[in-house]
Length: 150
Image (cartoon, rainbow, N blue to C red; front, top):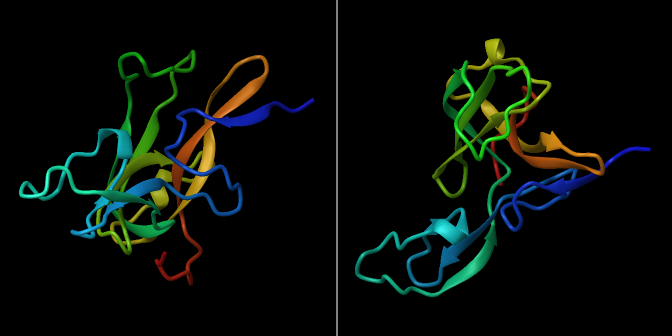
C-alpha cells in the first residue's frame, strides 16, 4: 500500500502533481507579488496595508544560484539518518521577477546545473511517517527546449 502524499506546509503550494504552483498574493494597487503570504510585508512603505488578492505564481524561471549543503540545518528541519547532502536552488520566477529558494528535485543531478538554465517547479518528498509522505516544492531542470514562462 502506498502512502498518501500530503503537503509539508499548508497553503504554500498546490498539490497538482502534473503542474504544481506556489500560492502567493498580489498587491491590488502596486501589483507587487508576495510569497509566502503568511510572512509577507509590504513592498511599498507608503502602502503598508495594501489589499492583496490570491495569485498562483509562475511554475518556471531561471536558475540564479545554488549551493549544496553538506551539514544538517537545525530544527525544525527533519534530517534523515544518516544525513545526506542536498542542493538548494535560487530561481528567479519568469513573470514575478522574484527569487524563490527550493531544494533541487530528488532525481536531479547538481553537477548538471548552470546559472541561467530554465527550471520548473515540481513536488518532491521531504519526509514520511507510517501513513503519509510529506512533500514540498522543489526545482528541476526544465526540458532543454522548454522556454521559461508562467
